[in-house]
Image (cartoon, rainbow, N blue to C red):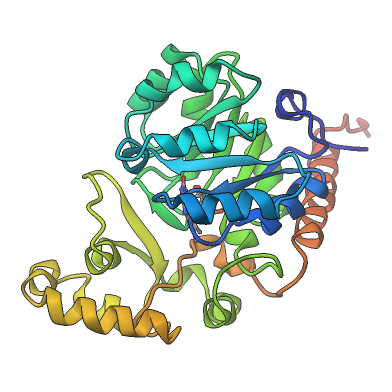
Length: 325
Ligand SMILES: Cc1cc2nc3c(=O)[nH]c(=O)nc-3n(C[C@H](O)[C@H](O)[C@H](O)COP(=O)(O)O)c2cc1C
C-alpha cells in the first residue's frame, strides 16, 4: 500500500511529503536527498544570495528539486527568481509577502507555483490568483510564521481552496502528523523541523545537537533574532526558535533590545561565528519533540510514510463494520 494523493500527481512524486525551504539549512544536498527518497525537496533561497543559491542548485545535481523564497526579500532582488527559474525547478514556493508580481514569470514554464499562507485572507488571495498548491502553515512551525494553529487552520484553508491541493505545515514530523494532515483534508505535508537534524542539513553542529535535546515546550515565537540580525520583517510574522539566554533576556523587552542594539548585535554576531547556541538561534518548531537522531533524510522520510500508513490502517479499522452480537 502506498499513500497517493493529488500532490503526488501534481509534482510526479511517490510520497506526499515536501522538504520546507529552510533558509541556510535546506541546501542542495538535503533537497536532493528528500527528492531522491520519493518526496520533493525545496532549497531555501531565504533572503537571497546569488552565490549561495548557485552553489546549492549545483549541489542538487540531477535531482528534481524546488526552490523557496521569502517573498518580501525577493521583491528587493527579483533577479534571483530568474536564477532559480533558469534551472527549471519542479516548484517555486513563495512565502511571506505579496506574491502577485512574480506570478506571470513563474507560470510561464513547467515550474509549479506554491504559496505558503498563514491567514484565510492570504489563502483566498492565493486561490484567486490560481496558484498550483497552497501551504497552510500553522503557528507550531519552526521559523517564521503567524498565529493560527495547524489543526483548525488546515481544514479551513481546504474549504477555501476548492480543487487546489493544500499542504499542511507546522508541527508535522512523523507519520502520525502526516496521517492527521490527510485526515484534515490536506493532500500532503511540508516539513522543516523534522529534517533539521538530517545528515544533509546545513544546520550547524551545535544547532543539530540542541535540536536532538529540544522539546516543543521550550520553543517560542519572538522578533529578537530578526532585530539582532538587522532583518526588517514586516508585521504579522515572527520567528519560532528554541528559547536560550538571548530570548530570555530580550523577548519581553524588545524596546530594551532596540536601545542596546549596537552592543547586542556585536555580541550576537560573535556568538554566531562561534556557533554559541546559547545566544544564536536554533530555529526549530514544536515538532522538535520528534527530532531524536541525526540520520539520512531518506530514513526520516521513509519512517514517516510507513508510520502514516500504519496509522491510517489503524484508524480505518475503527470504522470497519462491527458484527451485531
Ligand atoms: C530552520 C528553519 C528555517 C526556515 N526558513 C524558511 C524560509 O526561508 N522560507 C520559508 O518559506 N519558510 C521557512 N521556514 C518555515 C517552513 O517553510 C515551514 O513552514 C515549517 O518548517 C513547517 O513547520 P515545521 O518546522 O513544524 O515542520 C523555516 C523553518 C525552519 C525550521
